[in-house]
Image (cartoon, rainbow, N blue to C red; front, side):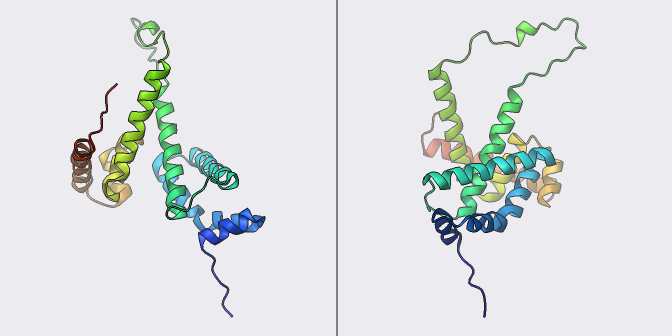
Length: 195
């Protein structure tokens, strides 16, 4: 007799009814794909472990709170959470100024902002980031992948080509089309990307 394979939705429902094993089974089913994506993006095992753990903590909290809505595939939702956490990490990492002590004429006050952004500026910035993320999600998978690797993971086109198993020219072409398509989407959807 063959064991019945439960869908992700059925496992979630069983978990919500109190079956802890269902959640374990669900995570086990998708962990290698999610972890591989995170590791490929951040290229640091310890950081990948942390983001992987944060991803599933967020997944569990969302499911427990009843906020998870079955709008598509569970794995796509989990990958989007992982993707957003990766972007958040890189965004925070970029905010930390690197100081070069070799330059004796360097003045720390040239790099410090004396006022934090106002709440309004922060809301606008957050909205711009959300709009860009939404537009990126509309791109074909190959273009989205190259755009993410180049701009968020700051990978060279050589590394992108090796990672995606294509030629450098193909990686460059995908990036070019991603930018062309983003410009078209910005125009079509009348998105304003300035403060």
